[in-house]
Amino acid sequence: MAEAKSVAILGGTGNLGHGMAVRLAGAGHRVVIGSRDAERARAAAERVSELVPSGTLSGADNGDAADGADFVLVAVPFASQAGTLKSVKDRLREGQIVLDACVPLGTAIGGRPTQLTGVWHGSAAQQAAALVPDGVRVVSGLHTLSADDLANPELTLEQDTLICGNSKADKDAVTALLSTIEGLRVVDAGRLEMSRMVEGITPILIGINIRYKTHSGFRITGLD
Ligand SMILES: NC(=O)c1ccc[n+]([C@@H]2O[C@H](COP(=O)([O-])OP(=O)(O)OC[C@H]3O[C@@H](n4cnc5c(N)ncnc54)[C@H](OP(=O)(O)O)[C@@H]3O)[C@@H](O)[C@H]2O)c1
Image (cartoon, rainbow, N blue to C red; front, side, top):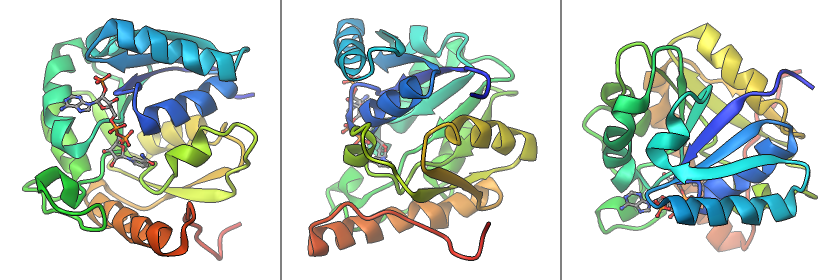
């Protein structure tokens, strides 16, 4: 496998964080689950370890988790994204890549999960970029993956995730990380400003999931 990386998952006690911890630990990466509460993080890491006995997992508060990680995955509801990033800002270092998965669903402002709310910066990803220290780069992705599907290590994903970012090198690094997850193909969707449209796919899929009672995914055709 490709080189093992360390990945901190802020909000790793939640749905997406759990699913990504299962997949990344299963792929051989070192995963630190972050939480506002270190004890809750350790309990979440133990739950993942039971599913992935070969995995290297630990739990810590969000700040300790982010400290020194190669990648910092932001997996908190959009309404808490800014507060979470501010709470770890002094633990982030130049060279780290923040992988932001937040979707500004209507639920953040009392609306529905099938709605997208406007973000002053343009997108959740651009808001994240405005909040991290200089030298920390943001790539967005994972928006269309189902947490439930990720949490089932027996299930091959067979779908794409679109990533956005301003540096090809950063996107290459994220692609190398995520491509270690079996069945997940990473597609470069352009600069960070494109994330506004990528984030908008999620409420469409949530609506499809409700109408068809499924976990829909996303796939681009015409690529090798
Ligand atoms: N669920 C999915 O299938 C999915 C797929 C793609 C993208 N996403 C996006 O990923 C993000 C996480 O989704 P999720 O479903 O995993 O969310 P979630 O389970 O509701 O929450 C994740 C974690 O965020 C932390 N959190 C919750 N409220 C908070 C607050 N007010 N302040 C600070 N931290 C708070 C909690 O961790 P602690 O209490 O332990 O701190 C919680 O376990 C969202 O932005 C979502 O749009 C989700």
